[in-house]
Image (tube, rainbow, N blue to C red; front, side, top):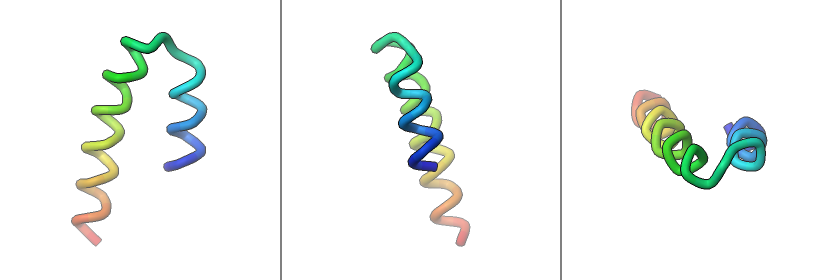
Length: 35
């Protein structure tokens, strides 16, 4: 997840980055909670 986030974070504009981070954050939380 970390590598993917770093790649996404630096490849997009700040506005797109925040939207993608919100989506990734939810997915990561769901994944961690399910384990």
